[in-house]
Image (tube, rainbow, N blue to C red; front, side, top):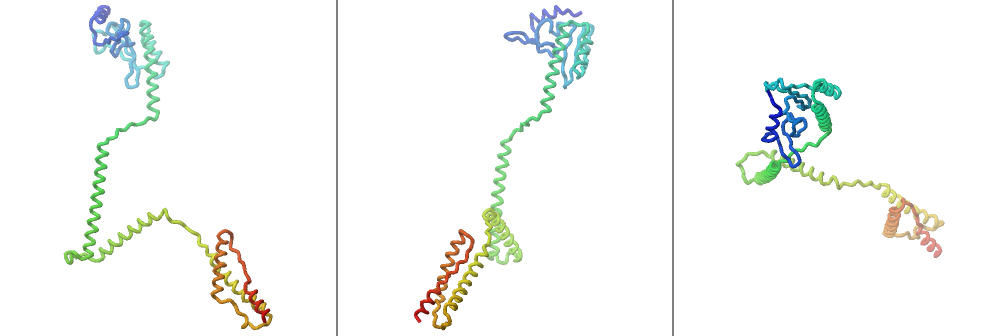
Length: 295
């Protein structure tokens, strides 16, 4: 038979592989220990009748040990699965530990409550969105960057060699060594031109500006100059009063042009500030009246 007092005296006074001594108290590393403390009431080795609660893969089990099964180590612990419902699980513990000591019964219930609490927290953390930490391999990144740089240099060299060879073929350096048709050169030139045009369009895309054409201003200026000429001629005819037209000296065309230019410049300055406005000046009338008075 198993003598619990003898076992405890040996474990307590001599050596135990599960015992851990600290500055304040003694702890027990045995997985079946109910409280984690090394004392007479909570030692699973020194008690022939013992019970504990354990969790495996999110499922809680009640483990029970009796003195009748101490001769069979493989059947020493009886395992009972507890329900996920809290009330039903407490009822199962009370039924299975009906005539057991009150200390073991209360500690099993406390351990069951603690395990259910940390399982709930685990499930909440699993459902919550978490950041995934991915390690960065700097050696591989450096290697890829070097390969890319080498590939770019090789591509530039190949393009330069291709251009030099084409230029030599066009100049006729190789003469009749290669029978290459002229269409190949033309196609290559076209491709180069298309690439240059595309690059030029990309560069000039941001610099383009659209300006509204002021076509009305030029037409207004032409109409104004015509109206001035007609007005000067009409006024000369009206002021003559039957006198000979040949005697009246009209202003020369060079003077007319100078005056028109001055008027146009004035109008252009005004147009920049306000809308175009027609102004007719009868400058010829004064000259005509002076000549008529002289007659």
